[in-house]
Every structure is written in C-alpha cells, then in structure tokens.
Image 1 (tube, rainbow, N blue to C red):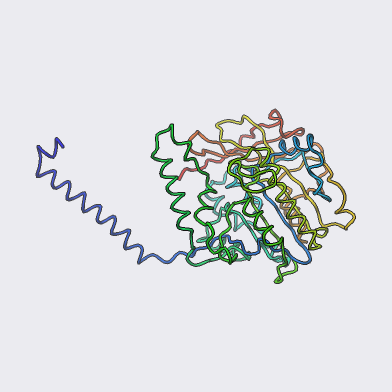
Image 2 (cartoon, rainbow, N blue to C red):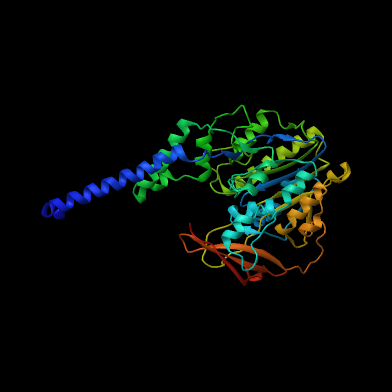
Length: 433
C-alpha cells in the first residue's frame, strides 16, 4: 500500500505484468486440456473378487499391520480362536521384507528389492520390468486378481501396463464414476480439518481409506468390472455374506487371488465379528479381520475347493511407526496352508519355530502354481536352518518426510527382540518429490 501510493505509475506496471503472468499461466493450463493426449484410466476393480476356480486356487490375504506379537497374544489367551485354520501352519518366528505398505505390497507381488548402490528412482522404475512373478503365475494358466490400493505401478510405463494386462481386474474403466454427495462430504471434512484451529481438528480427523470409500461410494455397485476396489473390510465382509458367499469363475479352472485388507490397521472400525462400526478397539479389530478370513474359508469349504487350495494369510508389515532411528521391532504374521488331501486339510493348526521371512513367500507362491520356485529362493516348507540370518528393509523419517531406507540384519533368535536387529550399513536415499 505504501509503495502503490508513492509510486503509482510503477505500481500500475507491476500489477499489469502480474495480471498478464496469471492469465498466461491459466491459459496454458486450459490449453493443455485440449492438447494433452487422453490419459487411460486404469484401476484395480472388484472383478473376480468373490470368485474362485473350480480346480486349483492360490489365495493370498494381506491383513495390513497385523503383527506376530498380536497373534501370539491371542494364541496364548484364546487358543480355540484359530480352530477354523485347519491344515494351516503358523510361523511365529517370522520377519518381514520392507516397510511401509507402499513398498511391502509391491515386493510381495514382484519379489524385487533395491540393489546395493542402485538409486531409489531406478529401483522404483524397474520393479515390474525386472519381475517374472506374475508372468509365471499367468503362464501356469491361472487367472489373476489383484485387489489392493498399493500397487505402486505407473501405467504409463509399458512394463507396468503389461503387468496389469495379465490380470482380470486391473484395466481401463473409461470415465470413473464417483459418489458425488460422498465426495463432497469427505472434501468438506478435509477442508474443515485444514482450516479449523488445532483444538478443533480432532473432530475432523480422517483416514486415506475414508476418502477412497466415500468418493467411490455405491457407484457402479452392480458391475464389478467397473467398480473400483477400495479398502473396506466391513464392506467386503458384508458383500460376501449378502451375495451368499463365493462362486466359480467359469473362465478358468485355476485362480490366483491377492486380497489386501486393512486388517489390524488404524482406525479401529471393525467389531469382533468383522463388521463396520463407528468406533472399536485394536483387539476387536484383530479378531474381526481374522473372522472375515474365516468366513471366506467357510465358503471355500462349501464349494469343495478348500483342500486343494493354497492359502497364505500374512501382513504387509507388522506394527509400524515413523522414526528417525531403529527403536522397535516388528514382524508380520504368517499362516500357510498348502494344497492337501482332505485328511491333511482337516488337521488342527500347527505352530512352527523355523525362522521364516517374507522373502520365502514369492517362492511359496511359485511352487503352489507349479512354476520354478528355485528362481525365487526357498519356500516356507523348505526352510530348515534354525540359525538363519534374515534381512529387513525399513524406511526412516525426519518427522516430516521419509528420508532413506536402511538394510537391517536380524540375527537368529526372537525377531521381536530388538537386540537381534542391527544396521548393515547399506542405505538408499529416498528423494522427496
């Protein structure tokens, strides 16, 4: 104001120049709407989510953030809780691969980790092109359904697009429809959280999946081929029950299903039976998420395909929080049931002490579909070294941004004992973009 009053002519030039700059910038943005190539809207849909094959099935459940320590507590206090897991083995001496979800889920789908001296961006860019995991599953004759919001794929990359093309549910859906009232409601909540004073912000807390769920809402609910998959455990469970369970995918006699659910992750909105409620507890959420899997298993048994199915129940990672230094140990839980005889599939849950890692899961999947598992390492069934040293890759934060990933060596012994964890000195800097 002072400058404009004392230098009116100069100020007028500043205003004109600034206004012209804004017009140019906005004009370029508008022009890009007409000159840019149309972007293909490729998303994971619900197609095949409630279908399995009549012959062979390999089913992987990812119950987010479910830690071995939580399973151990339930096993000690309520051993009968795991009765539905007949034919399964629980591997309590388990370590993860990497953390958080954005890196752990892609690892489980690609079997790719960063190499020493590899830049982070190069690793992220070549994960799909370096992987043969989904190729091997597809070549074995399995229809592939991948249900997660954490693919970590860029579908403008031909290699990532090639991976999507091997699935039955990840494809272009044209113009994605949204639930307009739901979208407006969650955007209003986000705006209130942004603008309200700190003392009022807790009333407007929201979670990523709440945004996804409300934006997607009930749009296209009768057509799973265009209905976007979103993380809603209670909704998944309710739909499973209201539709009368699972049915057969008549297009293939073999099916691979990778189903990522919120599991034990905050916020706690599952009751102990696995249905959505306004507010719950960590313990109820843990019980409820497992009961969703139990009901799915019950439907497999109704269809007569349980015995011959390989089922893996794990987490992408265990309990997790951002930290600047290594100050806690965590481990994802792991249950595995191979394809078996009826007698074997009826046996009570077994517990194994053998040191196991997420690094064994890709080989276990390859073995289950009949591919060459040795190309991926050892399966959980082949692990036989009680003194095995395992490796884990954890991201660290400065409190604002993720800064780097560090390789951690976990010595033989209890993986939940932090004294068995130590840095190897191998680090990857994660650029903030």
